[in-house]
Image (tube, rainbow, N blue to C red):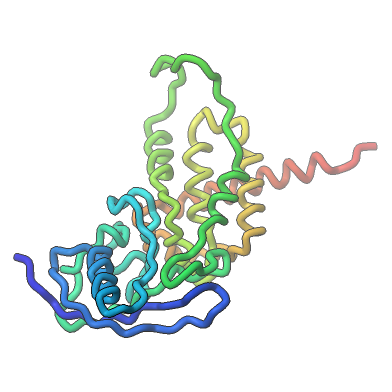
Length: 258
């Protein structure tokens, strides 16, 4: 049964990347049936009625698919519920009188736009660096024309669930994007269609990740714990192997011959 609870919010406010941020204290009464974003909607309605600036936060699908609802709630990306995006988090996870601290994803590679909104263009550039796959155009091939092991298909589809929200970066003490890059590379490298560019893709995506200013992976596994799609760190090991092989192959090509 729905209840109305009173909460004390401490929301990060920042006009833009050039200004200094601060925490704004806000009280709100909300139904336990409301989602976290619906709670923020109500807070904004109250702020507007009082003639104050509403809180800027990003969202789109509100179905846990787009990954844009990137918030750190009480120190946890997407909040306290495992395998859940912020838009799927409901207020019944909190108790009457709780204090909730709401912050943006913090990373040098995710510059602040305003309040809780950050730019994640770096992820787009990493994806672009990965390039394309070699695939024949025309009519769709027969479903059994290209046999793929069931285990590899399942692992590929698990990796393909990555929604690019950036929770892995926000949770990592080094602000590493390895889980994101590994998921995007793995869902292709596990399938036959991704083999021709496999080495090139691993090399290019990791180099672009480094160029964007993300930190190094040191196997804390906080990324897996924070991922709303529960993507396994096994993908990071796979990417490391692909990168090592590609790097050695690239170095061998550059050795001058007599």
